[in-house]
Amino acid sequence: MISTLLVQYPWFSPAVLALLLITGPLAGAWLYGRPRITWALFWISLVPTLLLALVPTSREVVERCTVGWTLPTFGRVELMANVILFVPPVLLAAIASRRPLVAFLGGVAGSAAVELVQALTPALGRSCDTNDWLTNSIGAAIGALLAGAAIWAAHRRPARMAESADQPALP
Image (cartoon, rainbow, N blue to C red; front, side):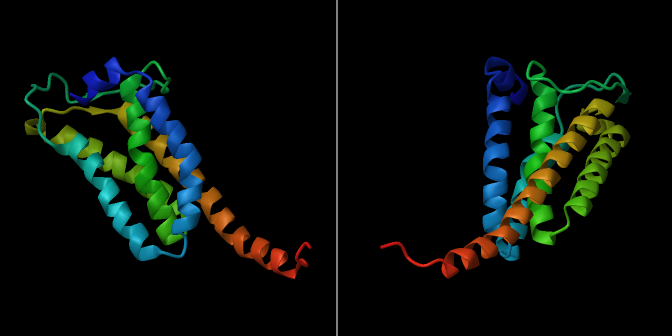
């Protein structure tokens, strides 16, 4: 169903990615210093990821794992969607923990765990795919980089406010 939607509207995934690239650092800077809200949003952001990866389908798995390395492009809607899927959780985990590298590694490991579960559980009707792991890892890297930008902006904000407080008011 989601694949059909993405094929019908191929502009959707790039638009969502652009939205994340623009709003991610801004929202992250605002969330910095608000760990409770950020962790809550992190757990909420995992729901679509887990549903899309682990809810059983009615299809029969022909092969357990597909090995291939294809970089996502705007024309490959499913690969682009896999990138987008991991940006929000890693961004939020990195902001909440203040550790973008740890969040990135967690995203990469989480994606590998999902692929392992899909490989070992044929009843899910899903097969593991190294392309999924690769594109999820790219999304995790984007999320970590956006979090790094947000953390940098959050640290710069007090300095800018202090500088403006020292400036005399204009007449």
